[in-house]
Image 1: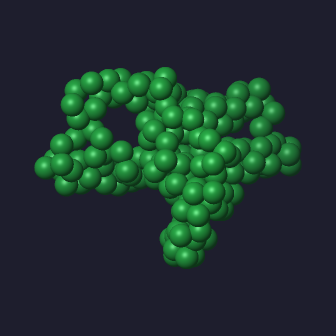
Image 2: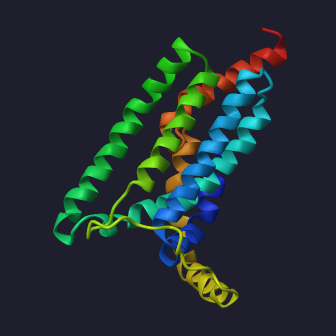
Length: 212
């Protein structure tokens, strides 16, 4: 729930940002933010300082970064593949998300078993760094490397159109909220690949506080 609430609240803004700013740059910042959040959890775990409120607060920050990642990720394929290959690219993207959602908890549990919850979070943080490196190596449809050094700046005059675009999408927010919060209410947070270390880490923090 701590991850899902900011995800729902900021998804509209994330969609507008993905439409107005370079999508690869948005993905890079999102990956970097999620890597930092996950590695902070790992560092606190290794230091023996991790508490439950840390997980709640950092999960909220993770959800905030995720709110900007998802729209940019879903809208970037046309920049990467020819139009005729878009159906195949979208199908492959959907397939990989489904596979990682299924096997992710098993991988997380295995990492906890062979290492520790902190080790599992450290590995998860590394995957976001790998993702960012892949984004830096990403090319365009025409084969030229994309550049983030000449990204257009957002002027003050752009704030009003952005707010207007958010207002246009606002009526659709309740449906999105139901889609995100209903799984969380059932105990299955979005991005299930990190659930296993989160649950084990929370249990460990609670046990330490009780002296078990």
